[in-house]
Image (cartoon, rainbow, N blue to C red; front, side, top):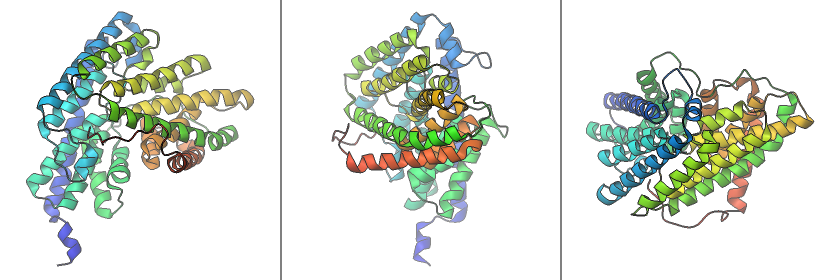
Length: 424
């Protein structure tokens, strides 16, 4: 037998693992999406097909926003306090890909808490929950089927990517996420597994018809103005995205994990609710803030939203909450792109604000995720637009990646404090 073959499971079992990883990820995504929508209806009266989340939030009594956020803080603080005290240690997706076992019950409670607080309006992303739960289920399936360590690693990563794909109905993004971020591998076995798992997950969660885009963006058109702006703005967006990543990392290390959660989360969430009295789009995972950026025409209101979104998301993490930063980063990137684009258009008009916002979202996200291909594909799938302006987008991403790399080399200590790795 070729020694290389010893690292692989028999084909039939491996195909079964890929299929089951996709199916469990699809079911997980379906469950979390419906739980989220149920909570949004309860908290803000949002009905399917009747209003966007921002419209539902803006139409509610401002006091209701504060109460909903305070409740989210109480639930989140109590849940994570009990999980930390009585549950098994939380294992991250990255550690699971490296071979650690994710405890199913702890991971389910941990993931569900994330979705509950986002459904009630917490200013953090929901995408980490399906990734974690899907990775845990993929690991369970792999163990039951007796996969080799290398194949188990592949299936866990593909399950996590498929969970991301299912919750947002973005099959290509889920596959690229698994390959670029988790596996860092383009071997044929990894590629077809990631594609198949994400495709199966989205098929189960949403069927074969494509849903409406996550962000509503008009058909975009390239201009010389956009091209020059992209070359100049890319490095700036890369630096800001890199700093956002470092802030998130530092706050994740510093966030409380004990009884302090019972105080910091309710207080912080209540303060975010008070901000939402004047800036409703600060609530939720960032979709509302990003949509405002894609539709923006004025600088001052957009600047307020960008600052409020950044502060709310970082404060939420620092208070002790777990969750994703993917959609908040898109919101910040879109806002910064639109802001600088509006100012740029005063000197060189003719470009749609939405084009600046889309390129800005991709460039900022590429630096904050440290994954340019995943960032670009995510923004393209979320908006179902952008192919027409790929050249400016690629140039902006190039500048962002280069600037982020320069920051890593020449300013490694900025906003970074040494600390133990947080498994959450």
